[in-house]
Amino acid sequence: MFEQTFKNIDDILHKDAGCTSELDYTEQSSWLLFLKYLDDLEADKAAEAELAGKPYRYILDAPYRWSSWAAPQDAAGALDHNSALTGDDLRDFVNQRLFPYLAGFKARASGPNTIEYKIGEVFGEIKNKLQSGYTLRDVIEQVDALRFRSQTEKHELSHLYEAKIRNMGNAGRNGGEYYTPRPLIRAMIQVTKPRIGERIYDGACGSAGFLCEAFDYLRSQPGLTTADLQTLQQRSFYGKEKKSLAYVIAIMNMILHGIEAPNIIHTNTLAENLADIQDQDRYDIVLANPPFGGKERKEVQQNFPIKTGETAFLFLQHFIKSLKAGGRAAIVIKNTFLSNTDNASVSLRKLLLEGCNLHTVLDCPGGTFQGAGVKTVVLFFEKGAPTRSIWYYQLDPGRSLGKTNPLNDADLAEFVTLQASFADSAQSWSVDASRIDAASCDLSVRNPNGGEAVALRSPHEILDEIAALDAESAEALARIRELVA
Image 1: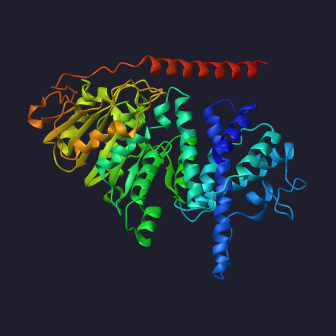
Image 2: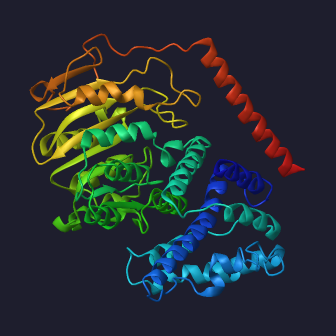
Image 3: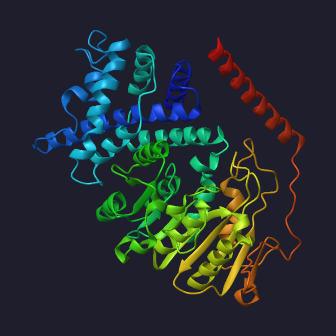
């Protein structure tokens, strides 16, 4: 039922002139889902308070609650069409009253880790893009059919929302910015092995995929106590995100996964001077896929000892500095980092080798990131001791990866198994740190067992991809015709 509702919402949004892409669909769905979730959360808390004989103080004032403006009910419990706003009245209420009221929560909140602060942040960053109040009414009625009351409902909705994020990532050239393949994230988490009580950080969190998967991993551990669950809710997962849309999606994604007030800060992580990071600011684990290829301004570069315009290299310095002594990290980066000869790349590799134990390099095949068009590696390291030996694994799924053939958990199962003992195989080998050139610190992937295998696609796989591309082209042409009609 929920899956069809999500499809219906996208179909309705597609008809509005204010929504022109998958990014718009996800953004506009997100703020409506957030308010429906908040209404269900308040209803649950009010019911709990009533059972306990205690008063409940609502977060939102009555006129701004979902059940007041979006879905007022008649005596029979059905939508009261006589009092439900629609058309220009609905659009004007949302734009002129609702959003300013909600944005004001940021200034009124007691602190950044409260749900009130998150409300203010979200609605201070986005706008209602729906131009037609009638279209907005249609979307609201679809969203109102969703329920966030049980864990089963939230679990199903989280999977559907993840699918929306994946589609949004696939829709643009910067897909990796919004969506890191979840099987890759899960493998990174299995290697770093987070524990209850450890603080997990992603300073370029995008849609918060790493934090959500880490929460799922820890939440599934046996024998959790009430105190453990509270620790997971409040003191385990921390993120920062620069872009408004990604920030909103991260908040919604974590909420759907079960974290009521996510510790996500809307900020430019790289604007923070590394010298200002103190011991209390450091984390046990860093999991991240920082953006590649960005160019940061000179004043931002001044925050870092190794000056470079490459965003990912600045993030790597930030992550190393942000780790506690003995802290563990798994970070996605372009494979050219391993061999670039520019001064910044060489200096950064030297910093990594001397200050951290870079114990594992996972070499990912082309096509791992849909739409990104770059080859990547994952660096696994621990801070505080120099590198003695690096274990390399060259991932070879035996097929070309693409939209119709994405990476899956089975593709990474051998890597996770062999990495536990740094075992040699046709796809894995170890390099002693003494064999690394001291001048270049070259860490290139060179498989002594025969190099990288080239996976040939079957005719069926090729035809599937052609069909998928044809469908995308047809949809794009249809949208262009609608816009010029």
